[in-house]
Length: 121
Image (cartoon, rainbow, N blue to C red; front, side, top):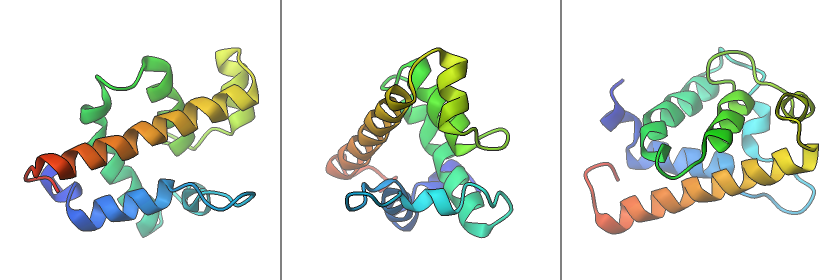
């Protein structure tokens, strides 16, 4: 699929639901699919993220992009938060903060796209 196909209303809604902040103590929906790289939902999730990524380059830092890429498993198996923390020499809680802030920025991008009434949304 091409980028325009990836960023349609249905896919944006799907992605927003996957990264939505759940009730206290619950995990985000994508946790269930990250370990199943061949599943239809994982392939859809990563396809949407790949289409969205160019829109994020000027909004997210290199570290934010790295954390999302590695955590989502963009190029290889998803890396656990503890390993990301060790790789970046930061605490586990800081990795979680950066990931959460990055996902918040992604939700803002979706809102901006919708407000501008572009052909993507």
